Length: 385
Ligand SMILES: *Cc1c(COP(=O)(O)O)cnc(C)c1O
Image (cartoon, rainbow, N blue to C red; front, side, top):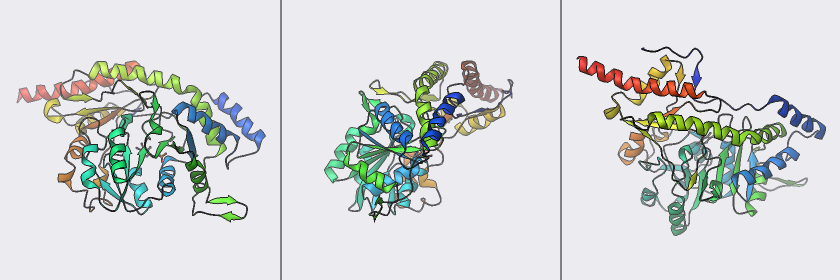
């Protein structure tokens, strides 16, 4: 170790905490209403507010993003096989498994790191019912090409938009693409309700179906018409969400400033690649992820991750490992290493750096200096040998 470690640990993210007084006032309304769950007034208000924020015609709130995504596949009545990416959070393929659907892993695009649309068609069989894309780190999937493929083959399209809160393509909300999109409002996401999630869709008729499915399939006092689940968001979560929404733009701007420092400090470093957003895309600022090429940088991503820990900086190998390498999926016929060469490479390179609104810009600069020093340190020692 050369420099000094941070005296307090710096984590990859920290949940956003709103002003407690604001939350208190909102909770007083909940107490006055005497309603804690089952589509209460706060729940209704948050659904409306989020339709505006996300620029979507229709939205249904859930207790978390994973249950929401499970319900999306029920609502569309999908079965058989679904083509998805191995480079995602475990929830994505697990949701398919919980629906008795086989995840079919498709390789990813070398730049966007999203499902490679040009490789989807070769994986379609007579069992394929849908494509499940993930907008990784908020970069939109190739939505128009995926739409074309789906239309040609009569498939549904579902998006895991957990990373893409507030993302827009040419001013259109990311949640308007495909049949259904899932957002996560987990504590570590840009916008959160502690735990929570939502489904967005264009077809307003889906709303009744999805709302039934998240409430045990109960239609009325006398009829239960579907095998539903309990996916309801409660009033306390909804109240927290309504308060957090007030701070959303402020939080985005803080993160934007942090990302600018990261980009300035790391954009010209040999062996480090940054992810560029297309100019027609409004970013989410949920993550800041770099790629480290060991052959050019001198040390591997794993080394940088480990060395930063010695300085009290806790970055995250996100995503690692590939879903297709999990014990539960690696025997699948589409999990074989030769078929996923880009994903296998990318998963060794990515590193999510600390990003949350209150991270001081000076600390960001120090983190960048540390990362850069790891590369030169190793080069010097090579020369010494
Ligand atoms: C956070 C996340 C999920 C899971 O959402 P929860 O609300 O925690 O259930 C799913 N997919 C991706 C890509 C995520 O980042």
